[in-house]
Image (cartoon, rainbow, N blue to C red; front, side, top):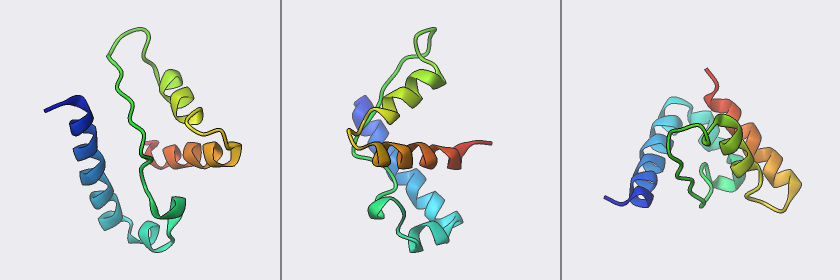
Length: 80
């Protein structure tokens, strides 16, 4: 399976589980009805890949500052 296909499968499975556990998220229609963006990120484990690198990638996916800020808020759902 290609890395891009793996990401698509992971996105599909996780959004179903998240909406099942937190149905209010789906009902509120957050993020324009889309939980995941269309973009994908593949990074290898190593010194060059860090949480900061991934956050910057997500932040810079949009030229619209408000949309980028909304994406960063979405990441906070996954903080443990």
